[in-house]
Image (tube, rainbow, N blue to C red; front, side, top):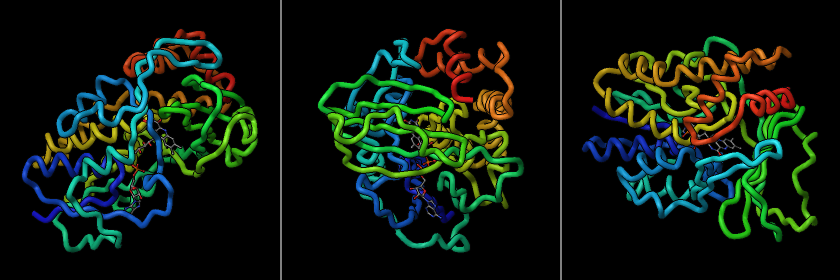
Length: 319
Ligand SMILES: Cc1cc2nc3c(=O)[nH]c(=O)nc-3n(C[C@H](O)[C@H](O)[C@H](O)COP(=O)(O)OP(=O)(O)OC[C@H]3O[C@@H](n4cnc5c(N)ncnc54)[C@H](O)[C@@H]3O)c2cc1C
């Protein structure tokens, strides 16, 4: 069977390594990238740390990529328990691919028996999703700061913003919004204020969720993993761990793509519920206790301890 993977981001690289370990050769394709960090989106937060370690330790030494480990996060000004690591994602992706070659040309799908769509928001090889998409515009800067800043996540009427320490005096500062115009965000520190920007980029996150991103497979040959099938937490925008988990699930059902689709939809059913809550918020309605509980369960899963009142405050401010 000739196998190709379209997209050499975190999901494509992880699936490539899973296949290689099973003795299945795959050709990797990606676009030419002109970003400083060689990877876009350069999103480097992974939670919980135990799942990061479980997934990466199958092939590599997880500690080699950890920049910082956090046991707390400041959410809307309040410090709560968390379990997150920031990771050198470009190096991790590079090492997962190892000696493999990434072809920077269009993927000739007709030459392959199986094509794995790992193209993130492009979803280049699967049919378009049926229902409305939730694509969040994000803007992110990598900065150097004279002052130590904590790991933080803050919401406001513009959406949400984050500060992720990524080792030494460097940080990722960013914000995301469902509004088309996200330039209104102004509370993040600016250059000159003890801060200097190293690089900046804009990108989107797909918050559509797998349930609303069907089909995850097509023509018995195309199969999606990671963000191409919406494997992203709709309320927090975290996708790195799920991008790798999809590769694991695909390997477990390599000869049963229908089974793979069913497994993804079942595993990430909580994303369907979060997406529903997101729809309500977007329509200007408040979160019910049940919606808040859905998010609380997700927070727990990623090692964060947050109260119902904090969840409601977080989303009330953002919408
Ligand atoms: C600004 C920002 C911050 C984020 N922060 C976090 C975070 O802190 N923690 C977290 O868990 N998640 C975060 N996310 C989400 C996370 O980055 C994604 O969910 C995750 O990267 C998805 O992995 P992926 O491999 O499926 O897709 P991607 O990482 O998007 O990789 C897709 C790859 O496919 C390539 N490609 C696209 N089209 C084609 C084509 N036609 N042919 C070949 N290749 C193609 C792209 O060049 C890219 O390399 C963030 C996202 C953004 C935008």
